[in-house]
Image 1 (spheres, rainbow, N blue to C red):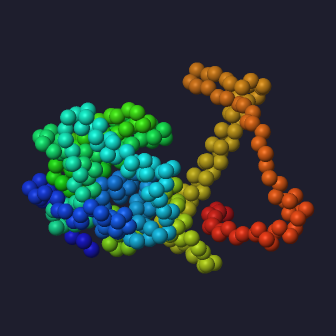
Image 2: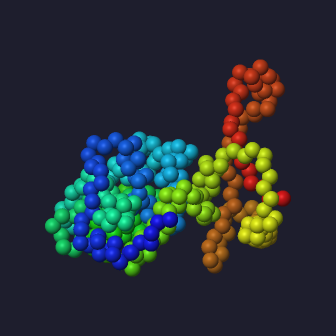
Image 3: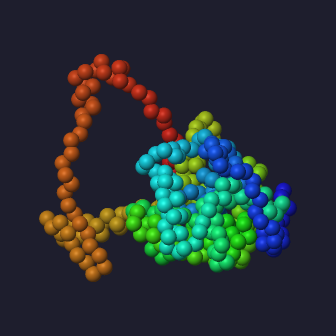
Length: 337
């Protein structure tokens, strides 16, 4: 069992000593860089580690950190449909326009940084840019937000990015960072984030709890997210017919009882939703749009689309069934009886 962390001492340690340069990243292959990341929690991992990343659960992050990421879908760094691809392509452009907008010079550090406190060797950071010659701000984080991601920036820096930056400030001991985000490919916003030692103290404690899951090879609790669902399917893809008797387990029996009640409530709400929707449809008749005090609805016919009648084809040409047959791997279904 790990010893309790003296967070006050760790904060003081980071203030007095610069972050350690754990691994130089110049010419470091992507595969090696990903392996280094498994040795700790980086800034982009921080929100997931504490359960506040909208895209990744703590359970999925745990799969990565414990070397089980072979069971997860791979991100192709050359996939032009991926936000990660365009984020990497546009990062130097965002950094250059930050300098043009603010007059502050920036430079790459080309290293994976590590917290200087020996008690926190798992706290790592990859800084997009270091801001040089400024007493006001020392770190630049570059972001891009497309059509779907832009809504997360309507009220300023999203929480998961704030946690990423506070993690970076914790590792480096710096006191401020700018987040430059290119929204929709044409709007550059710059947000200042000041170091928050109270938040950092809480963040370190929660990250330490997550890292204990990694060290002890114990999966963290699933959080109900789509990411956790995917992680569970990857972690337990197969079943072997065993029957587990949880009737004497009060905790799990209570969980199952809650699940039954929630499912019943959801079914009732879905039925009510259908009734309300149908009342509006009945009132609309052949109209396409209906306006209300609080919004609007549309009820339009979709365009005709062609379909392929596989059943008829195989009936006319049964010999094709063997020639073009393929097997699709089955997946586990969760049914409540």
